[in-house]
Image (cartoon, rainbow, N blue to C red; front, side, top):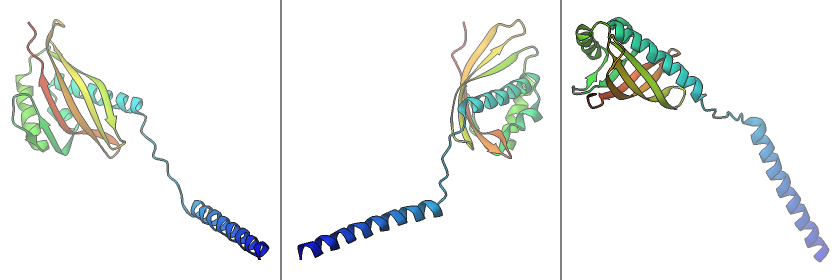
Length: 168
């Protein structure tokens, strides 16, 4: 009787092993595993810096259309000492006012210090510098922007910025 029980036990263990093994093989054969690959953040940072360089050139030139082209239609902008601007048209009005006040010869630059996120939404942290025609720094600030990928291009979806204390 002991031999028969040992024999039945061995068959049960073997059957169970084969069952798990075949289930595992079936799952592996029937399931496609897709790796969650993070974007190359160095490349993303370079791309965002390119977009910021475009933004800086347009802002320095007072080119309203070039600036507005960098925003999504549903963008929100929260600027220094102003109400929240909701939508591209509200942002356009603010950009037009700023462009009209722009001092000839002043140059704005934006430097990306950090980016994080995924392929479709990137959060950027950066610093801005404004110089006069002589190259002297007249103001500095900081900002945070969320870039949304639309048709393969990053556009500003949300931004917030403010100036540092005046330079003395």
